[in-house]
Length: 268
Image 1 (cartoon, one colour):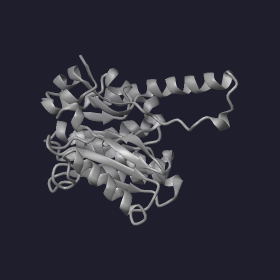
Image 2 (cartoon, one colour):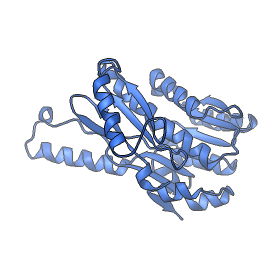
Image 3 (cartoon, rainbow, N blue to C red):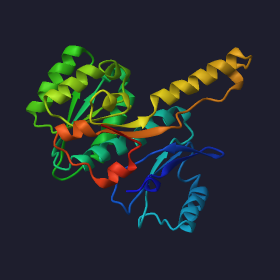
Image 4 (cartoon, one colour):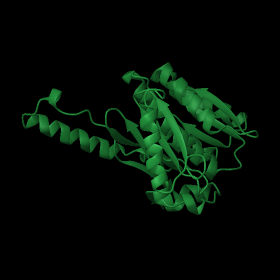
């Protein structure tokens, strides 16, 4: 799959703004994530116009492009979990493409993150990983001891691939999670580059470094006299797919050419 086949998602309020929702699909079937604060009924005329624009570019929904719709129905508080839902689907699909023999997929969650977000993430991964011959095993961890115990439980359950929730606690236990993954020869996908940079298999998500750069710019504007109330809310704009080639070799995984081409960074 070429980089252009990873299509930016569309979010619409009164004007459209992009979010990224890359998903690994067959080469002829890119996926668009369509996020809107509106409702499907009220926005039907504009959604149809969006489809016509796609058709002008040669893409017809259901034929050579798939669209994942998420609607907030006027409730702005629903936007963060909807964005998380869209991002979790590419994560699951990428892992299943890289490890097609994974009939049992593990999911590590932290319920302290907030049950609504956790439930949304669980459902998204379950839907994306759904297959007649694939099972999802879920484990919750909020402490170091639970991380260790849950890895043992996942291995006992026959898990052969792992999805780890986007969670600050798990980020702070990155070395522990990577060491356990390596010890048990368990391919995992994570949400930030720091995991594969430290020896994990792969990541897909917003660039944490770029996000902090934006925060620095934001703080600098305030120091120069700007009022925080007058500044726009910042959103991640740089998303990256990162693969640790050395880890893939140690796991005896063959990375499909489509994923190699689409990757933003390959770590040797």
